[in-house]
Length: 451
Ligand code: AMP
Image (tube, rainbow, N blue to C red; front, side, top):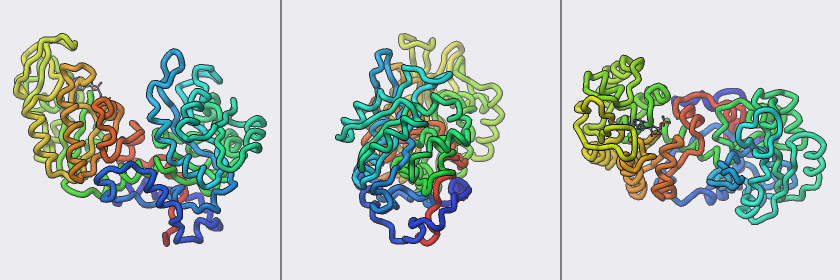
């Protein structure tokens, strides 16, 4: 690990008297962690991120009978009837919960859900996840309609070893996002230790991600968080080469930091999606009515000047007469977008070029779609990339997909289990790749130096 050291080098919470620091051989739950990971080719080659203590570093006696506050990301999408439309986040929380249950911990499970404005709102109550959680865990999960205070204390006292209590939405208190000290202390009041498994909010210093770590020893990473760190930090900072990054999506502006970082770390950076046209325009090419960020044209030019051969741009594009599914379409060479037409996908030559480039890649990171894949007519490039990533994973490459839209494309193509790692955090994954310190990670216990 090199460039991302900062993520791990920040403060430790100093529990030097804790048993976790006296046992360099604490490998007892490591096998459980590995067992919880999907069987994907390439996984064994990944360079693990080092630095933070994980729940799998703890021993049974560290957990049995202990009350563990777990911060998960249970922020599932709901329809108007309060049905869960995608349970990915609940499923992602299961391995850590199972490990804790099997080791006899008493679990307080907390999360946010939606964006409540001012106090409790029925449509954001976390009880909605309890049935699915119970089903997936195979145990009856309990819940309480607050996350701090007497009721929580009472229900926590009733917990037996291996039982789970879901606390109410932490964002019903505005103190949560303000990382209020008193609120964090109250949230931590009944717990002995803390497990942060909410990667999606690890880039936020909130009471339930960062504040509670001041009161709970040890505070460790959950299995999901650890896996995100292993891939997005370990595999990206110290990649098996060739390392190819594919960055797409609509705008250069939202991905500029990640592009810059990847240009330093990767052997090749393939630019796709709407941001292509800002680059094309900077080279004086015809872009018609395609999406262009005028104020980023100079920046695009300076990147091409500095990194030249490392940047790969599409050689052809699918253009449309209007931004609509029923638009007239044709494929043109890059730079030949007619006036009034807009580029909405990469063309078949570009797909072939990308496939050839990925053929011998050992690490691939993909963030952002290659076109307006929400419309079938402009989805081919994106799905071709998803398919190619699945194929090279099978051959042993480490493939990592991050960012909401590219993840959605992989899932839609039914290829989710054929990719080495699909990141659960959009903003958090970008920040981690950029080498930024994630407060929710920095606050966790460091690995003992001798481990
Ligand atoms: P982002 O959130 O930046 O990753 O961007 C994702 C969005 O980029 C998706 O909704 C795509 O429809 C959009 N997108 C991808 N390619 C293009 C393009 N050529 N023109 C306009 N929008 C695009």
